[in-house]
Length: 296
Ligand code: NDP
Image (tube, rainbow, N blue to C red; front, side):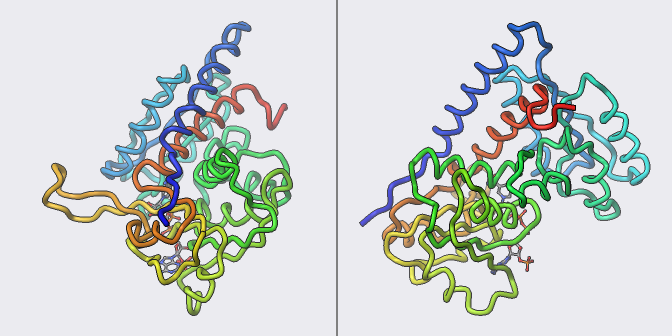
């Protein structure tokens, strides 16, 4: 047996095309194009790549965007003042502060400063809280993208046993909430694992759907999963590899070659969840422009 591949690149393209059409229709009605303000603090190479990918996607779908690059020495007060001025600027629909931030800046303070109505990343406590109540809100892009993939491939979620490995505020935790709480497509019985989980395999081996977001290359091996499992690998890890032009290659958290022999469905890395994250950001920015979630 070899798993069917979940093609995130293809599904993300479909989604981006849909957003592009919707943006066009929105503008045809006389509205200005949606506007995403990206804020990048410092010069972390991965963050530069991620913001570049997001900006490019905006341009493809007709969303206007600008990246404000700030020195990594900026104080928290200065940064929050900049965010507040974006909050009160009616021409800005969505605000994205690229994470991680330099260590002297509190991620919580920065996220809470963003107006929740412009929080297209879905990280603000208002959006996280509403998510856990299954109320309309901006949903964290990566887990929302995973839900879209499951939907696209008609992979059943309701009543399934889902295990999420990784419990971060921005990926693992909202993923578990969506799987367990969402009335529309969720309602899986869900377990969330983290570093302090005793005997990880005892949980992963029972999963019908196993979602991994730990940032640990090859954490999940074939002997840890059951036959027919659906595998969603969110992890992105750089592994040194001299045969590659860049001197490294990207791998997920799952030992793809061994696990695919037991799984029914599996996401590759790259080309699985990553492109969906960006597509969901485009969708959220359009929702922000239309004020669909928070009309006032
Ligand atoms: P974090 O480092 O914030 O969180 C990792 C989580 O995994 C933590 O909850 C941690 O536990 C848990 N964990 C770490 N090691 C183990 C282990 N051995 N066993 C069980 N749990 C473990 O990372 P993020 O959530 O931000 O990202 C996770 C991965 O997903 C990364 O590889 C990241 O690059 C990738 N990512 C991919 C995206 C995409 O678009 N595809 C988007 C965002 C992230 P504890 O809570 O106890 O510390």
